[in-house]
Length: 247
Ligand SMILES: [Zn+2]
Image (cartoon, rainbow, N blue to C red; front, top):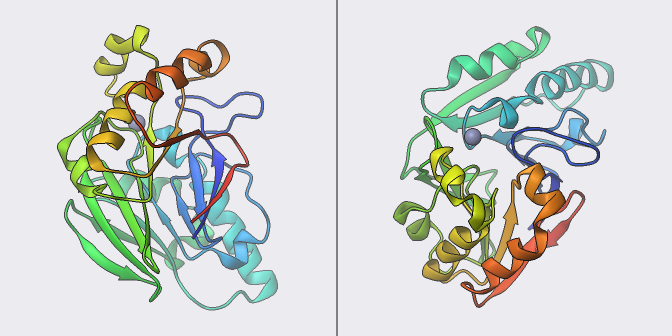
């Protein structure tokens, strides 16, 4: 599996730091915080999986669906529906963002914690409840014996630890450093240390920290990494825009 990070910022985008968006194997987007997509994606994408309905994770849906509509008409893109998978309860928010020219070709599939299914005959997918604000899901993808979990915005929880059991890569939100722990907890976000605790308890081999607060990215990255390393004994990667991780 090839995981490409297109956006790794949380809350707002700035300079070259886009909002949360990951692409798996050029086929699946996880969250949609970007509005400028690599053009080949309009041919290759099959689905978008949303962690939750906050604006910074869905802002790109209008641009994405208009692009799909235009490219479909112009190049007779293969006739298959594009699907948006999301936690149950945010369907209206998603529909509001889908471009009207593409509305009838997008399926919205609502998921619940604990769902398990096969996708594109390649991926085994499992979901778990995430503690954040509103309805939120983490996703576990498995293919050819390899696995990763993506949490979206999340505070540490037993559900995510269980979902991430012995996973190859845990991609966990970590917006803050310890000195902003109170803020993190009131906004239902994690510190890098808390994400590291989840990784350590789950037996993950590699931890990728992402969805980082702009203030922390600009001022606190040394302590951000050190605080995670003090807790998690495996490999730690701080996500940056353009990072490609293969597993
Ligand atoms: Zn959020």
